[in-house]
Image (cartoon, rainbow, N blue to C red; front, side):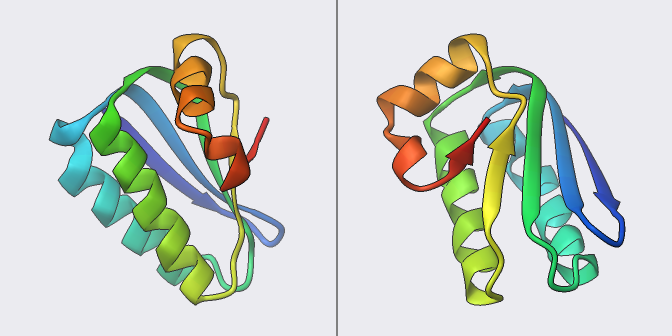
Length: 101
């Protein structure tokens, strides 16, 4: 999986691409830590437009991001979600935990 962190005055975005699974754990955690250090008070968006697959460990990583962001009073939104990725998030009822677009 590829990760890319972008922080502007108005937004903090974590762009993900490829397979989001257990192999991505270390890279995702490092990207999250970097993002939260740079984000200031900005809400966080996770751009999943280019994610082709995610598994249960990816769901756990998203929950970890949510918990870390919440501890610093930030909201997390999942954006660019479609196809089978959307289906997995819907089955897991993530719409109750995240804003999903």
